Length: 412
Image (tube, rainbow, N blue to C red; front, side):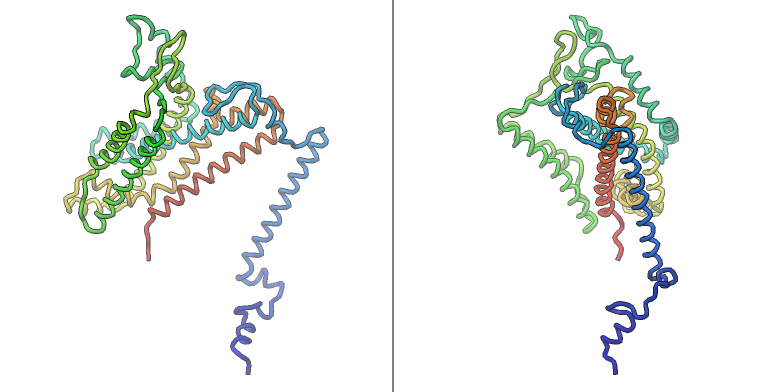
């Protein structure tokens, strides 16, 4: 009499299957998928090996080789927007880092702005007000059907011609004046105040960050309390109080550790403050407005995917339209909105490579432009460019997928 373990081995449970034959790799459905995956992997490796060997052979024939030594050589060119310290004697590696930071800056600003525009336009497109709904339809159709490069050029040229020159701000009766005495809109860009940090400024900024975190924590607590008990806490003034009161108290208790440096017209241009170049603003707004039109359609589709009975039931409970949208419709619509929203964020990041059209020095303009032309290291530069965009895209996808998992419908 055979034991239970011997029977399991004979039947293929807990050990190697009995009577295994090579023909089962194709005929047995348990192994067929693994067989084809293995074949595909081998073919992929062979293809890549052939391309790499072909590349190396061609480079050797041309007297070239793959080398990354050019990254340590002096760049020899200037970059108009420098978020970190940089000059023409810095290395190509540092120039690439400056370009990468510029890309991340414009991508972040455009993603935030496009999200706000898209949500507002998507909600208003379903408005009962005929004029508002049609205006939003015109916005969506006009912007998403024209290439983003054209919008970048239109916004850049419009701002260059509409804004005055810095000399228009000079004199006792100037032709142009600073907005609120703080902001100067010129054809060279926008000059805004900047912060000057003194003693105790670190604590002040930590309090500011904690206040922002506190706002999100309070709103999360209020929403959970509403869902658990039905008790509705006010959202507006408590959030505003948490956001403003702690930083104001910290500011005075620490003895005004932070001050403002406003731009002033000295010589032929403004000095001091923060200078936002027209190329950055044009690229930022063009990407935001263009992608916001796509996000608006995603938001509209997400809202329409929610049953109208949800709105009617919430209205029957006495909720106002604004609260119905914020507390009932949008939280459920996020499950539909977020997956295509990830693609839009990736598109913004990749479309930022059009920055060279208006002279904005992103990583395509530095590493993929001037550095490539000066050193002739096309393969190395393109490989680094591909690696950068791949890593940024994967990071965005990972972060958004984590958020998507947190808001998706939890089923038993």
